Image (cartoon, rainbow, N blue to C red):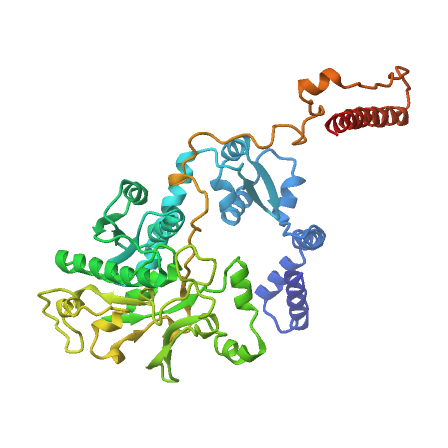
Length: 505
């Protein structure tokens, strides 16, 4: 339509300046008024109207081809089609038909066809190629926008053989398997190494170091916390002896980790701290419920413990000014004393899981000796209980707060163990097979009534009612028949029970 309006304006201008135009202008004016030009203008207008109705562009060249009687178009039209439609000539019709015949369906949107492939993809090789492309793209994105030179992650996990070991250790194992960096997993087992733990961690395919620790896990929670601290120090000794280079984190087997945590700890230089979410309220026992329902005189204590988080506390300038600890006062009276106790398990003031270390801090012959770090051997010879990695430092203000200065929680602390009287299969292997408690029927109860002992059946008098063998065609009759049969069975049982009771009296 715009081209038609432009041609009309050009015709008006030529008419207005006809008197002042030269003979050559009059010749061009005569060509505009030629029948061929008028014909093409009419065809162009018709194509514009068709385009408005159909919703897509309808070329006048295609209109000419539709009504053309000659077998071959003129050379000018063929050249115009070749220049205006290069994409249609690039794909041959046999290829499209072959792709449609291979199992997909074609949907036309405007002038373009969309091939819908069947699912799953018929060619597994193409699927693997697509996965490799996605993996390559993710690797490139991580190299450009992620950590430029990632360091090896060294995870120290204290554990021991117990009912819930498979449950907890499987969770932390799968978290470590998804870490996109090189990882060394040091598993310290109380009471020495066992085949049960070794077979479990061997399924991960990670670079693992399985070592034992002299000393069995105690029953009391307070003693367990102390022994776990010694086991973590034993893992740090392995890092010191083998000179493992990387970032040391303390991944307890019952904790839950976000994958963002492993990206965040790559930013630490020497010692870092992250916030830990304390899941101490999830108790399914009467003692735990009574602990959560506090009296009015402890209302202020509950208000102080609204944030069950341990971690660094920063000022407005994102500098470390202190520590936020979990308030355990409302739960002291009802806290768990021994493993398996049905009560709330309380954490320590600062958990080891909330700290990460540069492994060179514990190296023996490290060239980068820091004045604010204690000697590792002196800490071990001191004989004092090391409650947290802060005991390895002379100046705790040198700790680097991570996770937006402690505002993001990427780690959760939880202690849940099985009760002493719980019955779980050893190694979670069912041997011998399970007993049948519900038969493979619609109902779990038998269809026939239970039989009485033979001694009673000899002397009892069974009163029976003759059955009505008359059949009725209606459904209501069949229902009444079933009801009468149940009543007769109930009467027989009542009669047997009455006879037995009369004999006993």
